[in-house]
Image 1 (cartoon, rainbow, N blue to C red):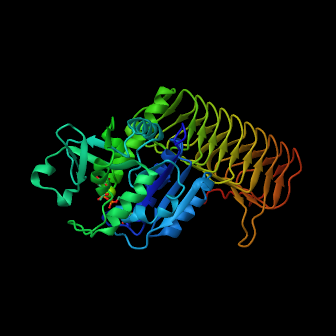
Image 2: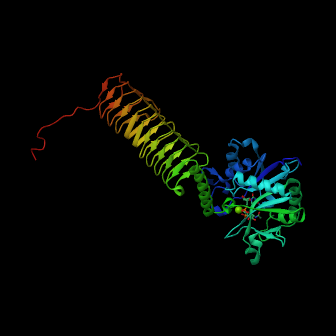
Image 3: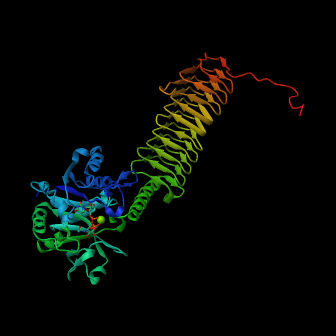
Length: 464
Ligand code: UD1
Ligand code: MG
């Protein structure tokens, strides 16, 4: 063995996860914006695995399609388990990676999403130092429920794991459980698996148990049991109740990190910040805010209740009032949005702008200081610096077949209840009278009015 031992990781992810009661395989269920298996791969890579092998079965195309799109795809490899005959059988289907493999093989479960890279690394270091052939993560639980139980001998050494289904009442009373996370000398793993696979799977579930590795290891060089500091890190997800608990823990961990970095959460339990989001300092997040995907928020920005911000870049000192929905939008410093603003993909809002209530924006640039304060649709448009778009303005960008652009010049003033029938240009500092349907371009500094003239009939009501 070399001085720094090399490690590869296997992720068990072939099972359907029947208890999820879902059309979607368990490991593709989402926790804070990425499927469970993504969290497990992240941890494996962060703890120094040179290669991560996912063992897939059910819905393998879907799982692979997601993994192959990730930036780390080159470090991934796959093994396939057609019939799910147990966790040892799953690992056995990856045996081609044991020949000339790294010194150690870590075995992780695709349904244990909260084991982070740092904790996993601490386990690997302790395991390697122990010089045992097998090491495993254990936890002590108030409610050990259906986890496998750790059997320790009189000297305190781990001797075996007994699955809940096979355990006696006395064994079920043990509160130390198997987390399903192992680090095994690769040469030992190859031999021990052959032993497990060659004998009948005579246990309560009729499956080849990976947990039998422990009794074999105990006989050959010993087993190292490493107890995790926080059992929530190793919580397995088998049902949607577990999924909610795992999400809750992940959310709390992310939010606490941001709080220590200077972000105020008025109610951290009610605010979701996905793993891929970037935040500045002195941001205030109200309850019910969901920041998703590649979103970034600049320092000094406030996001009020009920806002969803997805894959968007919001600058510094922005005020996002309640119930705004932003997707693939960009918002520059000092701008105020909402309440109830909808920024669709391609919205690009400059500095110190105002996009007020019930304003929808799509593929539109607002230059600095432009305002659309009320009840407006701006699609495929460019609004120049300081222009004022009055209440109820609509860019008529779609004729049933084609989308056309609207240009509003800097300093222009669009009166309320105007329809701008695109393609159309309103020149710089031009005015549009309220209630107009503008179909022709307006030169700079002109006034366009396009509406029926008012007729006033005196004494109309007198005859009644
Ligand atoms: C397993 C352990 C148990 C441990 C628990 C921790 C065994 C026999 N038991 O039980 O000791 O306390 O994890 O969470 O290992 N899988 C496959 N192919 C299979 C079977 C399972 O890929 O043939 C995958 C599943 O998709 C899942 C993982 O292995 O991601 C664990 O399987 P699961 O059925 O959830 O095992 P547990 O009953 O939780
Ligand atoms: Mg499980």
